[in-house]
Length: 396
Image 1 (cartoon, rainbow, N blue to C red):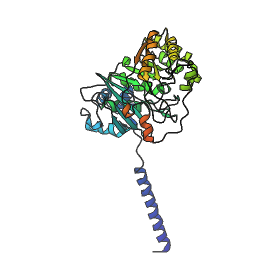
Image 2 (cartoon, helix red, strand yellow; image 1 turned 90 degrees about the vertical axis):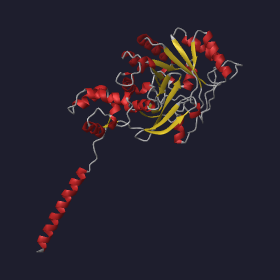
Image 3 (tube, rainbow, N blue to C red; image 1 turned 60 degrees about the vertical axis):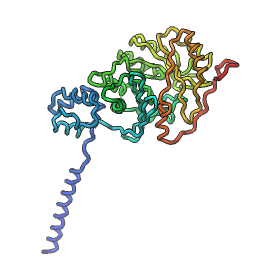
Image 4 (cartoon, rainbow, N blue to C red; image 1 turned 45 degrees about the horizontal axis):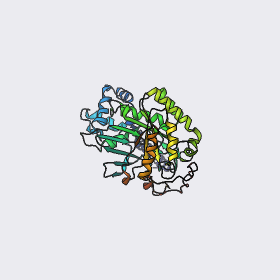
């Protein structure tokens, strides 16, 4: 064999090797990303099955398994043909979170720290109260509202949760219940400002309230907000029937600007007017929330100012004794201070309810478990001065 023939054969062999290597690389290319089933609406699921020559009713079957039968893996859908189950498992993901920590309290409260697919984490809570089974869910990683006493907002907001990540919280908490119990109430009062992630939240609550989802009546769903008037007006436009709970924490702008910094851009009057509009449209009694901080917003004059602010509103005031957060300079008022504060409000014609503290031994307040997991607290600004307290008033 001549030298030229040898070179030609080597060249041909190298060419064939390159073609084979390219083919193997193509065969080994990563699969198409899976779709999170919980990001899809019921209509989306119907369309997904129709595109695969399957009847639309498969969507209802799938949702019944997920929300009603509490399945954990697709292979449990025994009324699906084996090949269809395999196709669902190949293209649709059910879980994108992992339970990083799970804590129990003696009062029946349970708390999840969920790790998201990007390594971030959020919290959700199951509360047991008589026959009620209430869950508290998050809408954001962190929070941008800046409430100075809240662990959720330390470090600001990192991102919004997807619809699927919100729905997953409800399902994982539902799985903590025995088969003969079901979730009865949902409060969107976890990490984040719900109205800052309104589109994803409403899509998630559609699953919560739909008969093919969790089937929880909108009147048993409460959205808690510091008050974003434009978003509240959006709820009005949509004729929303969910309960709205507006977090006040102060009876006037001077103190609220310190405790809830976003208030400097909004103002308490705008918040109260938007809340009144929501009441007119929804017909739902408003709830106002007031976290009671010892020596900060719990003076007698604060109670009188708050009674004047709420006069004329068909509302319930939910007084919440502060659940202390390690590293933050705030304390729970004494029982005597709590009783005196609520007594002034009641005397002023305000319908008052004091929220029972639950889960404090498992750090059930928003953001506490996540901060523990991060194992670091940045420097904290000093607590607000109480410049509006009348002279000689005890700071409880």
